[in-house]
Image (cartoon, rainbow, N blue to C red):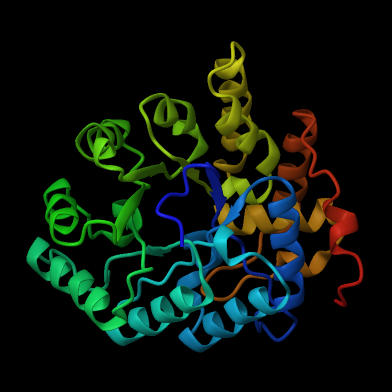
Length: 314
C-alpha cells in the first residue's frame, strides 16, 4: 500500500447507480468506475455524492467486492469507511485494507453534535487499534457544512503525532480556502496529503504543495480536472481552472447528486442513472432539460460514456 496518492491528483466520490427496486447496481457501478479510471481519475467510492449514508454496511462490502472481482485496481481506490457506529467503521476499513486499497476516506462519527476533540481522537484511535494493520492509511474527511462535526487542526496534529504514517491526509470540504491553506502550511511538510473538496480550489491547492482534489464533478468532468492536476505548472493553468469553474458552476445551480446522475443518464443514454434513494428525489424533467441545456451551451461532453455503459440491462 502506497503512502501517498500524490501521483493521481484527482478522485471522484463515485455516484452509486440503483436498479428499479432501489438496490445498488454493481454492473453500472463497475462500468462507471472503468470510465473514470480511463480518464485518469481515482475512485473514492462511498463518499458523500455516492449516497454512502443511504447504503448499508453490507451493501458497501458487496459493492467493494464486486469492484475488486471485476479487476479494478484496489490501488486506485479510497473507499469511504467512516460511520456513526464504530464497528461498522472497523469492518469497512478492515475490508478495504485487506483488498489492498491505497487508503480509506474517513468521516468522523457525525450524529452527535458538539463532540470534543478527545471523543473524535478516541474514535480514530480505536479504529486503528482494532484494524491493527500497518498497511492502513487514513484520509480524514472534514466536511462541516454536512457533518456539523469538524476535524480541527489540533486534532490532526495529535493524530499525526500518535499515528505517524497511518494518518495520511485529509479531504477538506469546508469550502474555506483559509482552512485548506492552514492545513497545507502546518502539515504538508510532514508528508500529509491535503485534498481540496472541490476542483474550484485545485490549482491553489497544488500550488501550495497539496495532493489534488476529491470532487463530486469528477464524476462527469474527469479528464479536464485530471489534466489540470497534471499540468498545473503550465502557462494555461489559470485558464484551465476558469474553465473547470464554469462547469462546476452549472452543477452548483442544482441539487448535486440528482444533477450528476441526470447528466450521466443523458450522456450515457441510460435513464436508469436518474434513480436516487430516498430521502433524495430525482430531478424533475424540466429541471433536467434545463441542466442539459446549460451544459450544452458550455459545449460540455462526456466522451465515450455511452459506449462504456452499453450492455447493462435497465
